Structure formats: structure tokens, C-alpha cells
Amino acid sequence: MKFFHLADLHLGRKLLGESLIEEQRYILEEIMKNVRVEKPDGIFICGDLYDKYIPSSEAVALFDSFLEALVKENCEVFIISGNHDGASRLEFASGLLKKQKVHICGTYKGKIESVEQKDEYGKLTVYLLPFLRPDMLRAYEKNCPQTYHEAVKQVLKELPYNKKERNLLLTHQFVVDGQMFPETSESEIKLIGGIEAVDVSCFERFDYTALGHIHRAQKIKTEWIRYAGSPLAYSFSEVNDKKGITVVELKEKGNCSVRKILLHPKTKLAVLKDKLENLLSEAYQEFRTGYYLSIRVTDEEILEYPVQRLQQVFSGMLECRIENRRTLAQGIMETADLSAIKKTPESLFAEFYEKQNGIPMNEIEKQILRAVLGEMEEMKGETN
Image (tube, rainbow, N blue to C red):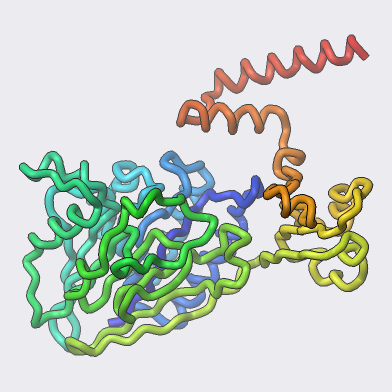
């Protein structure tokens, strides 16, 4: 059997204020092209489908169209929730979707859900373990575990595991190999003191463990315990990462192979670092279109309007920093917030409101805001 291992789609995500929805649409279409060529038996989507607990309508519509395309290709789909997902919301219509071979496990309900498959080599079981915190076991266990590792170890211990058959696991956790942590990037939520760490030893009995949570594709200890990584770079720390689809093929017990299909983003990411005069020269002409850019200006002297001058040349500049001996010695980076420059007062306040309250503004609140902003504009005009 052949499976595509995906994770961390983060639909609806922004890069320094820039919407990536069209980039995500493009990369999902490329994934679908590979589905039509490779014809996998199933797709693993290992959590963080969305970037927010309450995703935007366009993010939901995009995933809906992706799911519809997968079903049309007769591809069985296995989905678990991640820490960014609204787990219970993700399970909407899951019973109905199961009839279309779409298996969604958003919440842990006292035992790990599983789906049995069969091929010429016998039975294969796919286990679905969504993002798990220790407190989620309180309703099911007398002695609730204190750590993430203990929680995962405890629920896996209850599996009706047959070691003669092939067993696969989907999970979304921060998996470590002893004191060796996975390689992370700036686009992930920073963990405090390794409190969320789950040791790789929990998964060693599975023929393949499909991981989500870390945005860089990598193995953890063995070839058969892997992070798929995100299909797109979500920070400038990932400019050199090779994003792609992890392809898992299983034959008889013990015969598992893994390979990677590279994905090609619509818009590339790049970090440019040089003096302003050089940056504005023909030497950097290729980066003027088709790139999202983080630009680091290294001039020691004070410059006149460097951000505005760079913006006139580089349409995709999302960040501009001054990096010279003075800023480095002071331990600071002078950064222009270009995302704020591009936004309207209404959108800036709406973002502040959502961060402050955890929910977006409703339509009545938006109307009140527009009225207040309108009055402010009128007062400004009278003053001028």
C-alpha cells in the first residue's frame, strides 16, 4: 500500500501580515497533481489543518475543495487534529464523511480510533491519535498523567496491538530522541523547557509513525518515525528547506520504504543582506518579482528613506531590517513593520480585538468601528 504523509497545512496563515491563501491553494493543487500521477491508496493529514482555532471562511472553503478532490480520486483520507485546530469543530459530519472513506479524529474519546485496511500482504491497521494533552485523560483515567510523554505512553499501552501485522500511527506531538530535540523553525509555537516532549520510544513498535507538529521534514531516530513538515515555508528561517510530500510504501511486514516528492511554491522566499546601494542595483534584479523577501541592510551610516526606496524596487518585500555594527552591538534589530504600513485602521483594530478577546469581531461591532473611524476622519478634516 502507498500513502502520502502530509501535515501542518496551516490554512489561513499569514506571513508577516501577508495572506498566503493563494499560495496554499497553489500548493494543494500541486499535491493533487501528484495524487493523480502516483495514485496513493491513502492520504495522512497529521494535524494543524488550519492556522486558527476558528478558521476563516476562505480557509475552510479551500480545505473543503481539497477534500472533495481527494474523494473524487478515490483516495482514502485519514485526518487528526493538531494543537492549532478546533478539535470538536473538525469532527463536524465525520460520521457522514466516513462513508466517503474520509476518517476524521479530532478529539480523544477514551481510546485510540483505528481503521483496518487489507491488501495482498494481509491486514494493515491505521491508528489515529489527535493532539493530546495530559488533562484530556482526566475523564477516562483514575490517575491522570502529569506529562505529555506519560499521557501518550498510557493511551498507546491500551492498543490491541498485533506484532505480526502491520501497524501505522498518526499523531501530532513534540517527539524527541532522549535529549535530542527535532530541528524547529521560527514558524512554530515555542515550547517551554521541553514540557511537551514525548520520547520516541513510545512509537518504536509501529511499522511507520506519521508525525505532525514540526514544520521541518525529518526523521526522529529511525526512518520509520517521521515529521512530514509543512508543505510551504511559513517563516524566513525556512528559506533553505526542501518542502515536499513524504511517500510511504508498505509491502509485507518489515518491508517499508520512504521517499520524498518535492513541492514547488508559487512564490519563493529569500533573505537578502547587503548595502543599500548594492541591493538597489541590477545584481538583485531576479528578486524584484516572484519572491517574498526579508531584506537586511548593512550600511553603517544613516540612510535616507531606505524602506521606501527598497519598496519601489522589490514588490514582495515583507520585512526590512538594519543590521550593522551598532544594532548588533546593542543586541537589537531596527525592523520596519511593513505589514502594519499596508493595513487599514479597521483591519489593524480588528486584529487587536481578536488577539485581546480570542474571537473575531461580529458584524455589529464592525459597523460601530466603521462609524467611529468615520467620525475621526471628519474631525481630522475639520482640523485641517
